[in-house]
Length: 170
Image 1 (cartoon, one colour):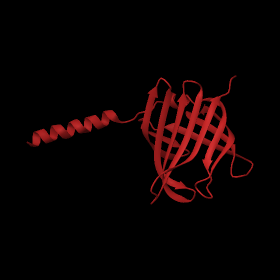
Image 2: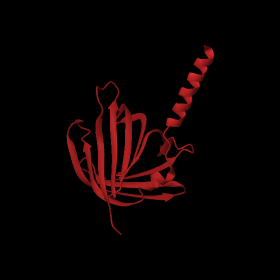
Image 3: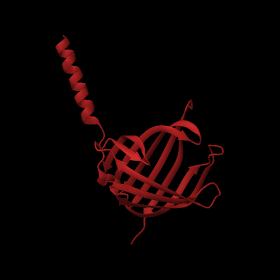
Image 4: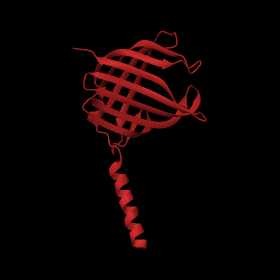
């Protein structure tokens, strides 16, 4: 009987290992270029009001990392410039964004494009939260960046940011 339990456990472990999400550097590099569009975000003052503003995004590589730049006006202030670096951990199952390691939970490729979702716990609006970020690079030169937040002790998550871009023609 214990032999069958051992075989069943090994089968489950092997299935789980095969099901792990692996991302390739070329997945990240699909964001390289210049992009224009909008940011829709939830106003941090009340967590309910949605604000939409113009935004730009650019990405390139440097020293084996993807370097990104977001520019957008935020909370009535002048333009905010947000620089980030992204690199994959060697196994392709985790991503490091600005020195913070995130677990990659989804990699989906369809005829419409590529979706990558990564998650971690941390702080958002000075509150403890589970944060889910993702990007979709579409076959029609579209890019979506999202940030969803589930605050500690909250009943449901909220979409904190959604950037929608079109690639700028050269």
